[in-house]
Structures are given as C-alpha cells and as structure tokens.
Amino acid sequence: MSLSAAKPYLQRIRADFGDDVDFDAYPFSIPAVRDLHGIDFHPDVTFFVGENGSGKSTILEAIALALGFGIEGGTINNRLLNTAGAGSALADRIRMSRSPRRPRDGYFLRAESFHNVATYLDEMDMTTGYGERKLHERSHGEIFLTVLVEKLRGQGLYLFDEPEAALSPNRQLAALSAIHQLVQQQSQFIIVTHSPILLAYPNAKILSFDATGITEVAYEDTEHYAVTRDFLNHYPRRLEQLLAPD
Ligand SMILES: Nc1ncnc2c1ncn2[C@@H]1O[C@H](COP(=O)(O)OP(=O)(O)OP(=O)(O)O)[C@@H](O)[C@H]1O
Ligand SMILES: [Mg+2]
Image 1 (cartoon, helix red, strand yellow):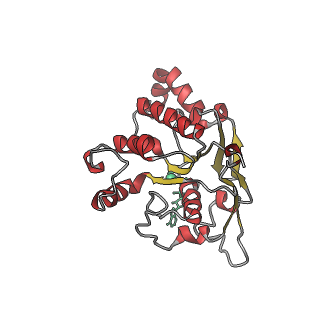
Image 2: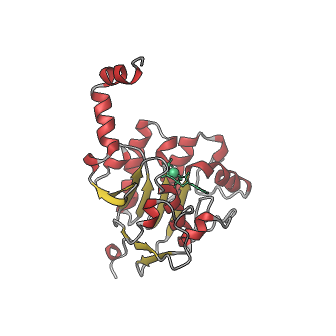
Image 3: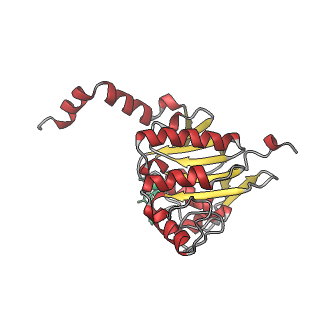
C-alpha cells in the first residue's frame, strides 16, 4: 500500500446510541452530539468550530478516548488519570472507521490540562525529544510550539483543542506552517479552534457546531472570518456601537 493511501487514519465516526441513552442529560443533550450520525474526516485537517458550549471539546474528547488517548491529553501512552465519566459515556458509543494503516505518532492537546502533562513529563524525565530546557521553564506558547516542531514526528494523528489559546498572531502563523509540514509528512489533524488565522488552512474541512447539529461550512462563511474581518475593517464604528451608553 502506498503511503498516500494511509490517510485519513480516522476516516469516519458515528455514534451508536442504543436504547438506553438519556437525551435530556449531558453529553447526549448537546445538539451536535445528537447529530453524530456520521462525520467524515478530511485526510489532512478537520476543524470543529462553533459557539462556546456547542459541544466541540466534548466530542473531541470522546474521539480521543475512543482512540486510546488519556483524558488529560498527551501521547497515547500518557494516560495520567483516565477518569471515567460523562466523556467516556459518549466515547463508549463512538464507532470508528479507520485506515488499515495505523498512525505512527499521536498527540491530544487539551489547552486546560497542558500544565499537568508538562509536569508529568518533567517529573518522569520524559522530556527527551522536547529540547534541552524543561517544559516548565518555558511559556505556554513556547511549550506548544516546541511540541509542534520538535515532538511531533509525522505520520501522526493529532487532536488539538484551541491550540491558539497560547499563541500570539505571529506564532499562529508559525503553527500553520508547522501543521502544513506535518500534513506533508502524512499526518492528519482534528482541531477545535476559534482562530480565524488557523481556519484559513486550505487543505481542510470546517465543521460548524450549532443548535441544529453539525454542518460543513466554507472558510469565508464562518462567523470567525466574517466577524473578525468586519471588526478590523470598521473598528472605530463598531466600537462606537458596542460602547454607546444606553
Ligand atoms: N462534565 C459536564 N457535565 C455537564 N455539562 C457539561 C460538562 N462538560 C461540559 N458541559 C456542558 O456541555 C456543553 C458543551 O461543552 P463543551 O465544553 O463541549 O463546549 P465547547 O464547544 O468546547 O465550548 P468552548 O468553545 O467554550 O470551549 C456546555 O453547555 C457545557 O456547559
Ligand atoms: Mg471547548
């Protein structure tokens, strides 16, 4: 089999809800979760976008658990505390179609628990491959770019939740370039983001989560693109409107 046939490593997921699911309770009450009849992933990058609370992290975490990542993030082997809970209730119901060729590398980045993973790796002295300096002696953004550039080896399946949270606009551009290099080295990404910069990546599919479920959307039709562009082009006027006294 040629390398190009390997991707997408994760081709498709769907939820098999069975008869015993409570659609009034988290996580099954979330419209995007109820709409998990089938997501087909892009071989390169699939973005999840949507309003705060629309279920992006919930679904990314369930996919990560189903793939064997620890809930705290990190590589497949870094199972810190795989707390069973609401996340795993969904993960248990996720059915995956995968490429016969398995990825050789993997990383699940959860912005909010990156600190724990960095502590763990430092304590276990598992920093080989992260460069010379201990991860805790670096800033948040530096850690993330270090992982992206030095740790990820290619031929990987990478799941990132809001990687832009740590990154300056310039570093987001650097991240785009690093992601592209990894894509060219046969990697696949699933990225939750609010960043209009990251979303511009062309070899991608954007899935928008809202009250009606999950729909594919073009970059220029995303709220992220439209709102950012409108604001930057007209910010004095928009500020007048936003900050006007009642
Ligand atoms: N453990 C939990 N128990 C109950 N409800 C939860 C739990 N975790 C999240 N929720 C709720 O589920 C919904 C989806 O949360 P989720 O974190 O997936 O949103 P999100 O799309 O990632 O949002 P954001 O862009 O703010 O990160 C929210 O309304 C949230 O309050
Ligand atoms: Mg989230």
